[in-house]
Figure 1 (cartoon, rainbow, N blue to C red):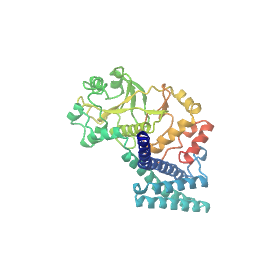
Figure 2: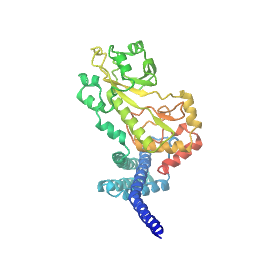
Figure 3: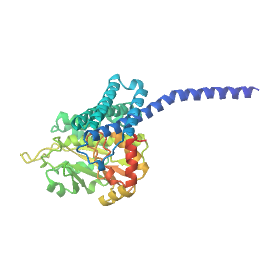
Figure 4: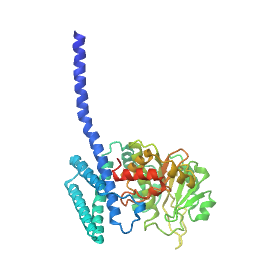
Length: 401
């Protein structure tokens, strides 16, 4: 009798415990899913309004074109999920979403009246508001992500790099920017890099670079960066600027782009880890500060680049094989994961030369410095098979669902 009562007691309170656990946990799961749906609805709408604002410039065959019903469902999803987020969304953001919708409807009306300039302006106004809301929601998601231990640790920790501390040639503004991404003294490649760079100014020009053992794999025609191997740093590559390179990409100095590469790589790495993404990977990246001395030549033909980038060698397949895999080896799982990464990582220029296939059977994000210009769903389309292109379009038009 006693045992029966005891078992009944345990079952009863065990049930109460489970019910309480469901009550406690369920809101968190629901909020996470609502946040995802909100960001993805905003991402697809931002992309759609951007295309609409450029109808006169856009090749419609290369773009994802939404019909009226598809767009309406996304607006409904954005409003519903925004409302469900409660205190996570301020009244100002709620107002901005309504304003974006109002501009969108006005653009549709002007389009029907063949007032194309007015329509383009309305869609541009809608895009600007949606893009702000989308990027803000992503930023909030990152701050609320309790699993983001790596970023929290990296933000707070002080990387010990004695050469960096002693280097008086690096301005304070640059020091602050590159500090979170510095290579540590105990990194397995730190001593090898020191051996190469502390005695000679290796990066004076292409000739000195190669004379000191580097083999250039490619030079970015617009980024001006050399991607190279060295026998002393097996398993890694460097991305370096030569001191005789005076041109700047988009009027930003080289150190700016190095930090952007690190920032973008960390963001993608967090998305991949938190969402257990299997088909895509990203190279880890560290900034190696170049020594104060030996210094670059002091003349008008040279400048001082303060650092270079050390990255994992992702063991990429040849370019033609990469394109072939994008054409014939892509599955629905790939596209679902890719949509999530593009939508939650911001960035741009998502195309096969920046998302390259590796010998390990994954796609690696290798150039991660590009700034966000709204979700970049278009660039990958032409590399997909007709079947997968159609599936990609459905994902984009349905907010990833």
